[in-house]
Image 1 (cartoon, one colour):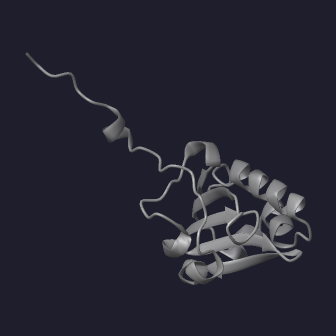
Image 2 (cartoon, helix red, strand yellow; image 1 turned 30 degrees about the vertical axis):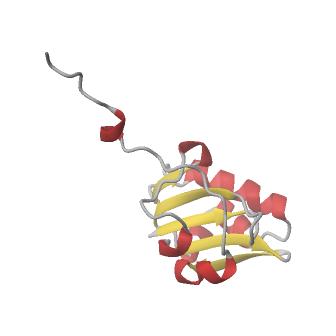
Length: 127
């Protein structure tokens, strides 16, 4: 499963990171920071809990986390193909499926896609 996190909805939403693995709401609720994120009532608590979640997710053996500094991790261009989208809006955390993404987030500026390791390395030409 895949998950993306945003600090709000709409055109000004900021992508906070992503998870690949056991990223469903029930699994995340099993972690203290995941429960805090899902129960947040203010945007700072939500964003801080997401950052904590990105830091502990891999160590807990649930999958791989992707920080914004790593770039956009998916081969698709936005969150419409993501299984779960977690966002904060109107005083609470929202969990939606990626298919609904186009209705709630029509345009968000995302970081550049991460370059695959093989594409970043080129062999010198032989003469």
